Length: 513
Image (spheres, rainbow, N blue to C red):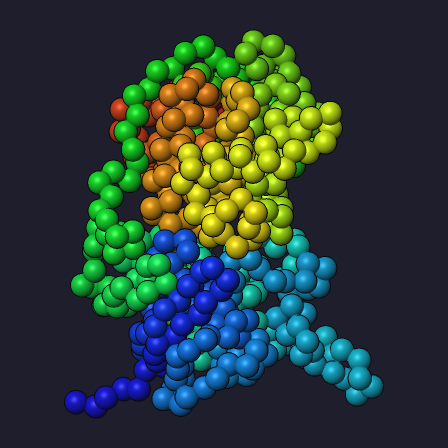
């Protein structure tokens, strides 16, 4: 039997940050032309390992072999020159530059007089996308692309540097099921050309369907590496969190009371139109739909953060047209936004500061911040939500994604809150932290809060919501009663896939399930 040299062989990789052992003697192999999944809870060390391969961080100890040759990655440029390409969860495109310009950023073709040769640049980009089986408008600005198209540009850029190892960090977190299928079609093309893929994801079902091998990290240590064919979802969860999770979606007894929010004919130009629904006290109401359906814009509009909104909005029976988040906050409406890093958190500020942002009145006197009060408030919230932070003074950027999300939720727990809008609260969050966030949602509902859960994950909507509103093309296509948790994904998708007939006459009522 011929022994095949692995594309990448990691041995004894260790990395320590102040107060945290991020990785401790981690080692595994990535085979040539294979899709190797890397899973673990937030804080397990996945991001640190990606940074080491990208040349952003240097390991304290350990060895890396690429195609059987020992390498020392000296920086990001050196990593790229070695054939290692990383597509991060947060894209790094130049918004005002075109697709072709972004693909070859810093490596533009030059003409006779040193000017950019756009004809050659476009020809090279077109050839690259053809090899991926994809078509993109090469002259359009990156800011005008869909999320899936932006990701395609990132992958094309990586391959333009003749990548031998492609690292994809949470690539499907913002993609629809159709776009995920297209992504894996491209990945298969790459692996057929002997490119190896390290696929970092929290979506276990996706991994079990699409990947070849899977490695589990926990608390910075290597737990297991095995063929996906030999793995099960339950086994991976147990290894990731160190314990079995009996119920992914914790049970909750629904006690719906009075109507706390009523939306009638809500319309925002080029975002959504004629959206009507109501949410009761103690209810979890999900808004779902494909990427671009308008579900997030509806939640943001209710919070007063979308301009030029028309329609009527009632909170507790009182007409309330919010022109700003400040007005919504005064009416006891809260929002945990979709993009926690850009919209929800001050990453370089402390955990304590982020938690107290929504309620400075509780931590100040005569307009002067009382640091002790802020620290005590943060410590209570850290204990209540089990946030993994050394102390309230640490920078929020040092926390894992799941713990950052808990901080955004903790911000609102100290104030009276009648309506809580949670936009993709578990995106990029590991299975253990997900269950904890679901428990928080249930507690909010049990206290009488009206919860609007905006999610692209259909299993999450079905597992958590009492009723599910399905959006497509900026319209609310129907509201499904899910009181007995019997709604199927097929039924939701039948409403979520837009057709001209449906968009002309959407059903705002309760269609027969």
